[in-house]
Image (cartoon, rainbow, N blue to C red; front, side, top):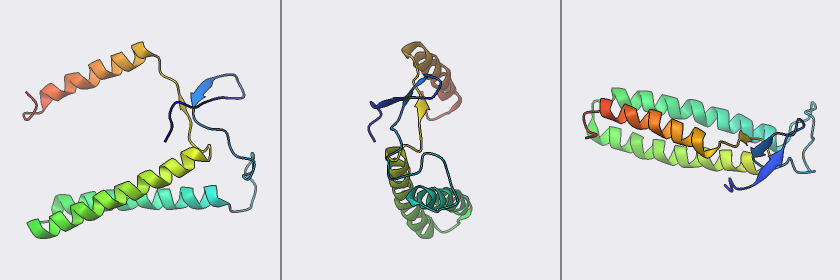
Length: 120
């Protein structure tokens, strides 16, 4: 995913993302296109990941847990590929954060590391 590309919204806001290709309708109509299908698959994969994680948290057998973890990791990779495809179709865009905003968030979330006993 190339997060260096930017688009300008209707209101003039610069965003990270891509424009919707001409093959896809700019305004959603009743037809089902590749974007719709990918969104459906992405939603299903999100639910599957949550289910896998719940199952992993509750498994007693270590061997079975390791198999489930490997399956979950492969599912996560597939979900990432679907997300990237949708990003490339112009489906997902994000506001461009300025360096001070990023620094603020890094500071906030770095502070949380002290709460974990494994992080010292």
